[in-house]
Image (cartoon, rainbow, N blue to C red; front, top):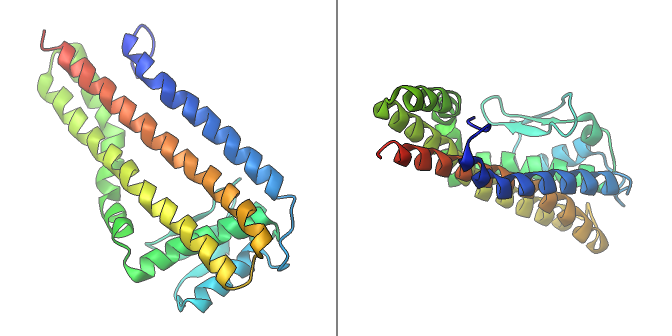
Amino acid sequence: MFYFGDPTFIFLIPALILAFYAQAKVQSAFHKYSQVPGSSGLTGAEVARRLLSRYHVHDVAVEPTQGMLSDHYDPQKKVLRLSPQVYDSTSIAALGIAAHEAGHAMQHAQGYKPLVLRTSIVPLASIGSQLAFPLFFLGFLFGGRTLMDAGIILFTLAVVFQLITLPVEYNASSRAIKMLHENAIIGQGEVAATRNVLSAAALTYVAATAMAAMQLLRLLFLRGSRND
């Protein structure tokens, strides 16, 4: 919002560069390691189910879902959903992603505090991301400082959500590497490749957080300009 003719757009340039780099990196890493079969011969779905069972998480279903790299864990329904590129694949990339999502299920089962906090603020963060810019825009156009402040507060909730997401994602990746290695699903020589895939994916969350933070900085700058 406010891109055209808005000098504060320059705040977003570093975050945009990081976002493009992160997207290119994750696609490159996935493409590379989706061509490398894991030594275990297990599919992503089999790995997810094996890890859930091994760590006594018996109330989470593993299901296929549609969409490229749409893998996710749904804590409300307790369902771990894997994309076609992961569910039926035996590649290193698939095993790492499946284990990462299983890591989220472990976090949920163990009451991992950052995940609990993130889940609790999802409704507020969703409302904040949807209403923040319309409210701020109206206030900016018509001189309504209260509306601008409301927009900033709401968008701050979305930024907080992004910040909390970082430790959740990095912890899930750390768990994934440890579980895969401990259970001999990947060998020592496959650890680095698996870590590369998960590190590339984690960078996309860093980029999203940076973008949200820069957007908030823009709103604060524009709000300050209305004090003149």
